[in-house]
Image 1 (cartoon, rainbow, N blue to C red):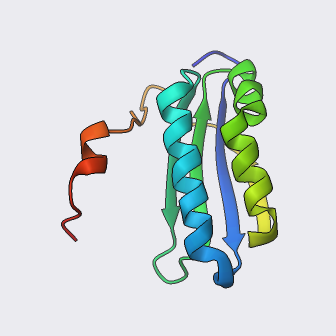
Image 2 (cartoon, rainbow, N blue to C red; image 1 turned 90 degrees about the horizontal axis):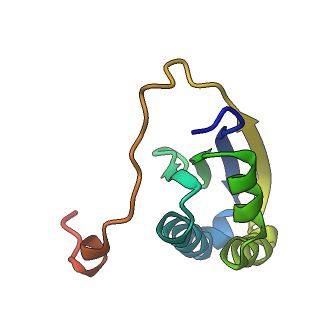
Length: 119
């Protein structure tokens, strides 16, 4: 990550009426971003166990340029425009890593998409 890289927690509250549809958009944009954008280092989304409408996404970008490229991409614009009516609140919280050498390696495993879930 360059000195102007971004580490961000995106905190999203999704309207419960749209949660399933929102999740499809979120998975799609995260997958495409990690597969096609080298400057997108992490796109790790989690839902609160007690309230799955509270979504937090850990996003890391190699640089400001990588972030700008990401938000102008067709897949991000599809996500953003498609979910505007689904999101009750959004907080973008830029954070500073306590230990920058401790990184999450985040990637899409293509074979996992074809394997059945073992929940």
